[in-house]
Length: 193
Figure 1: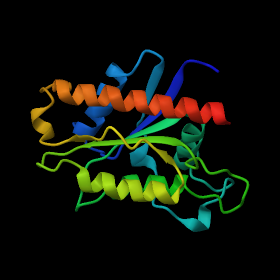
Figure 2: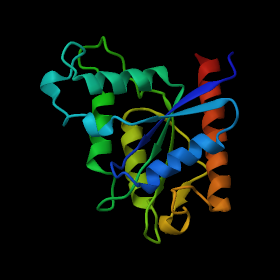
Figure 3: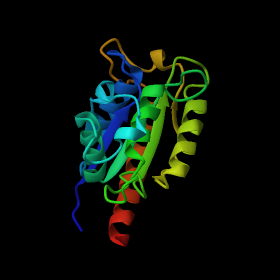
Figure 4: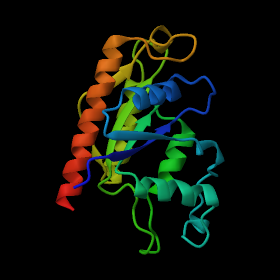
């Protein structure tokens, strides 16, 4: 069994100064030494889901790229903001594209994929409701979700400095624990394969 793990990280926010994207950069910085976190930056390019072209021969290039990266990764890390008590449409859209195999030949990138969820928001409840909604999506895809610890960054604007660096030690500790739990789950998945 190899020691290094590759984690694909996806921010559900398109904002340039997103706290959720900053949270993923913090994950890169604070990941265990044998875990490599790669931030996916193509969310904006993924077109609206269209079942009429949901086959390997017709996938738009950004969709094929996302599916390939998820398949290749040992685990998935998602940082979601909260919009209208739920996950952003762009994130749900990307997961819709990654969750299907109508032809029976493309594979299901999210099936049994180890996944960790976290999120940041400016409110006192953080991204609690968005994370609950996201967990429901992953029930359907039969993904292997890290249950604890929960990383819910509330009042996010108080936990990052002006350069976008995570400065809150409690959040950093939770983030490290989440990444360790994700790595452990990914290793167990690899051993079982």
